[in-house]
Amino acid sequence: GAVVSQHPSWVICKSGTSVKIECRSLDFQATTMFWYRQFPKQSLMLMATSNEGSKATYEQGVEKDKFLINHASLTLSTLTVTSAHPEDSSFYICSARRPGQGQYNEQFFGPGTRLTVL
Amino acid sequence: KNQVEQSPQSLIILEGKNCTLQCNYTVSPFSNLRWYKQDTGRGPVSLTIMTFSENTKSNGRYTATLDADTKQSSLHITASQLSDSASYICVVSRLTGTASKLTFGTGTRLQVTL
Image (cartoon, rainbow over all chains, first blue to last red; front, side):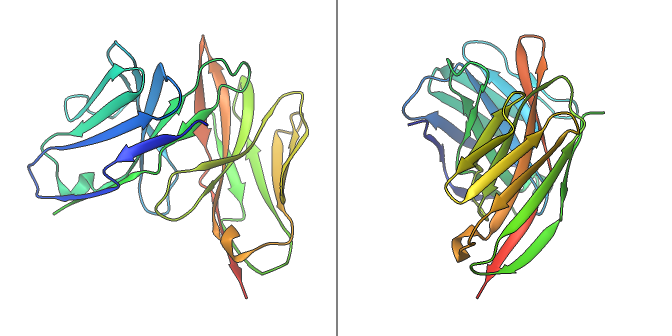
């Protein structure tokens, strides 16, 4: 159990276009999902926390108008990179928190999406 | 400042050998500590998770220890295999009101060779 999927696994787009990445919890309902970005040889950096049915909470320095997050259901959150530029090229990873885990409060990570902006 | 530091930054070992990775943290208030394995181009996969009261936890050939007094953790890998080649990330969860927040270490890149 506790499987999180992402789609697409990789995407190449032209500068100025928008890209949508989906994150799904396949076998549990996730009231909270998280979006991370990871640059080469660096650790994951939290971009935003997505709560089902409410607005996402963005970390300091992350532009909410550029990285649009929608968490419309308990199993799906989407991240849209608007007007993408080469500096947005990165590995985007989502995670989902499975409720009812008590003190562990564990997050389960998706396999990631490699975005390359030309 | 909430930080997680890992050492060594990278490590190369021969197949079959053991190794130990270190993690020091200054995260507060502490909730739990996790070790993840991240293969290149993939998302992190949980290996172990320990709360304040747990000082050791095993998952197959992986054994994690936690000393909450000194704020140190280690991940010991026994009888390494080529498939163990990956980045190992130490992550500490802290409580922020009713929510929890993760602080990630920069990881240790392990390469297992023949």
